[in-house]
Image 1: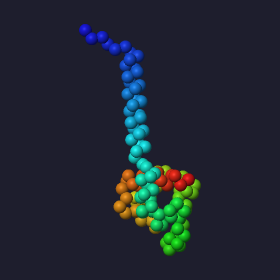
Image 2: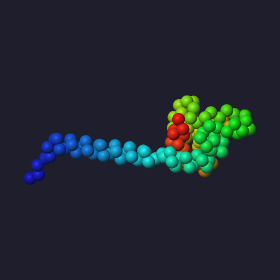
Image 3: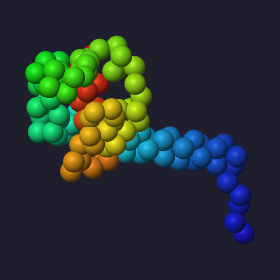
Image 4: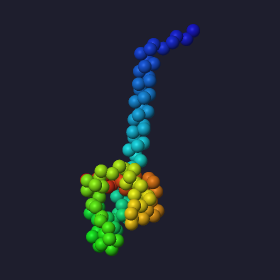
Length: 117
């Protein structure tokens, strides 16, 4: 005959399983968006208008008759990741969507922009 496992052992197993699952989810989330990868995309696609450090280029702002807030500003940093990704992927105002950027790359760019605080 097979004996049932004691309650404490089952409870310990469940706790270990939950901890392992949460660790896996957290590590997968962290690998999703990366600032180093975002810097590469930013340099290639965003820096021509927004500047190497996100300061915004005055000539571009004047040419399009817009204000380019510094990406390190409280105004920009207060936006959610989803809002910033939407600007990259869908555009906003006179800024058109950034062509050739995937959802993953947009998340990476946002991760890089967060380092500009």
